[in-house]
Length: 331
Ligand code: MG
Image (cartoon, rainbow, N blue to C red; front, side):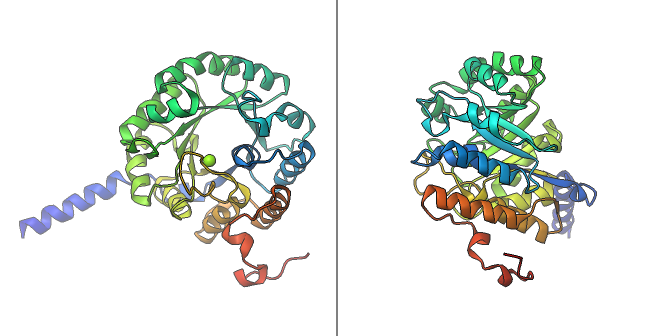
């Protein structure tokens, strides 16, 4: 009957709208942005010795990840865990094909990043005013004003700039965030000259349905290759969210942390960032091209766990190697 016809027409139209990914885009290599040296270590109670940080970054450099967030040029009193970023950047062995980035909150931080020959900086804001007020003592608008000279200065010096948008889906204070708010912030960052955008599910509350709602709104405004998804695994949905973004929206860059190191002080019980090794395993198992050696990442995670003195909870690091259907690796 007529209701059946209009129903199928509606479904057809919906499918057309969602056609952001194709077989061709699914063959594009996936890029992993490894954030454990910054986003991971800054949430640890202890100061990890500089030499251990350098070892970690050097080991990660050989795993196949395309970008490593190696440090942060925020005030050392605010984040003492990363007070040695200048020294770290000077000492690491930079591998060709790997971009080493750092978080930069202001012009003083940009000065330090420049002195340390940082190739790419990251500025951070959010989609929710309550979150930026708590986190950086500014409204979203004020944070953008603050970053403007930083972004322009970095671009002038030939650095790349990434823009983090925290609480892109859920906020610990405001609950669900309307996709339009995230799109507005993203467009303003792009207008300021930011090269790529990282959309953060800061409290790890988003479901694949939430990811679809956001990406339906975001994708008309940005090339998929300039987008990265930064998910946390609080409710166990992080890997599902990554697969949804890759399979349905041609997102090919993901922020991950070895062992799932990291957390969010604003989300009670928040587990860390999604684990790099779990993301790589899931994407490869789904047919994606990912040039990252997940076993090397597991080794990094185990070393990291020994240094910080507590276990990490990635799935892959807890599975003995022969049980995942692979031949036993050399030890
Ligand atoms: Mg994170």
